[in-house]
Length: 218
Ligand code: CO
Image (cartoon, rainbow, N blue to C red; front, top):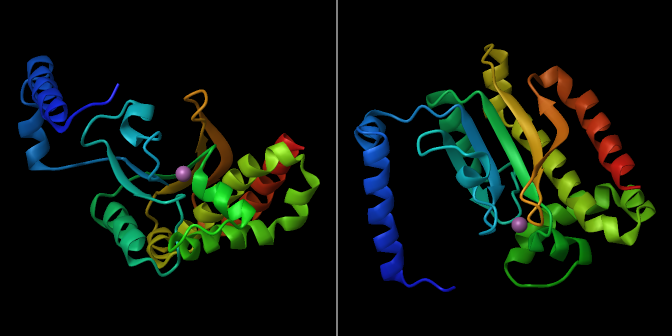
């Protein structure tokens, strides 16, 4: 059922009135500050809305989304969002969330040319190439989902080695970085067992998580 722009505004008015009725002062409370405990780094895909999936209200999750949930070392947009979340908002958890059926991951797996985004997806092709031997041993039907998982794990590492996280952990700030994947087909989040809370633990957790992904899909 397709919705018009007018529908969006009328839904918005109903929603705002309902929130205010159920929780008087909700919006005036939000005006004062946001104090989210969580930062979500996810794919821009319209089927993966951070708040709805996790039942989090406005004010509870700080969100950064881009095509195929990539964290590039020099991406000022992502790094600025991470810095703001960690240093200003003092989030306790950052989750990098991939999703199965991601067209960005699929294009990277196939090496398909789609345009400007090829350069962005090149980062995922690098992930594919790094794990080529492992991916090729998997049944063909599992490779796209496996690359989705591997991409998440690699992007968790990229968050962990950013100056923001290196500095945060060096000064003793408690922040954990997690790798999750969302099933568009069943609405469920999977924990990829890649939860990092210190610079020292990146390497062993990374190796175990990669082994876990491959074992689960072999
Ligand atoms: Co996607």
